[in-house]
Length: 384
Image 1 (cartoon, rainbow, N blue to C red):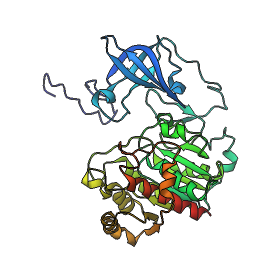
Image 2: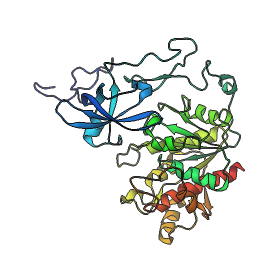
Image 3: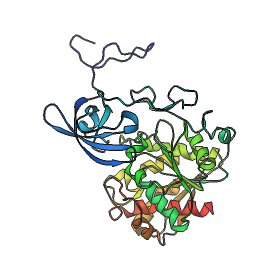
Image 4: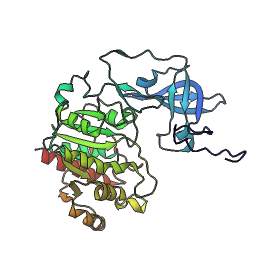
């Protein structure tokens, strides 16, 4: 670098450490809690007064940082909030530095979990993996290798989850449905108010990969799927990332590409992959109208195993024609399954949690939610 150049230097290839670096990845703030706002399972909203007199809305995960109270000093990561990125409009509480929580029970004992998630970050939690030797489910999963044909719905966005569940329950109200939270969006399951509202309506949530905070923790999607079948005794599973998703406006640069990899995982374990297509005639972005390019790339290029790609009947004729044309190249590998939608609108309207995708509700993006519900109906029918 030339003298006075403040650009970040590339890491040393031998050590991975930068020679000279400019802090900027985290925008730190400190302040005092003035009020507690909404609280749901695993999360607490706060108002935080900053030293300059401004107020910042923040979110704390008590399982990580303890339970904040008015008057507590908090350390915040405010970068995404200040940049207007997708953290739900929050600064995130990193610590209550003057009132640290006690060590968790069984910490540093042989019976504690050893599964580290959000690895090598300052807030990495150490959890009990569902298949670890200390887990009560270890013996059950030690040799598990087969989903026995369990239908598994894969979806690009977290917002599809309640619609898929509504479709399942429209025909099979007693069907046991497990949700696998992948790590493309929010890593803490606690961030999702949808999951909070669905507590008691799912057989359980399994957080896989780097995500955490589910009812069960799994190191990979494969072990998570096996746990859904053999531990939670699910009839149907749903795989989708947490709230929020990464997108760069390029063909490959989006977190939903993992949907195709999920199809492969389901197939190799002897499950029945079902693709919930991202269909919309309301999204203002051309690449997401009709069948989103996210679905076309994930299922058309990444998924190497065949899946049932579900198209709901009763779409607007122009949209239906657009969908059929977009899916035609995928028929060499996948099965296009058309599902009747009688009763699905009522099931969606009766959802136990609000339906919203990209700020649009059921009425504003009906085709999107209908497609997700149709995939749930198909899964329920396969589950028998």
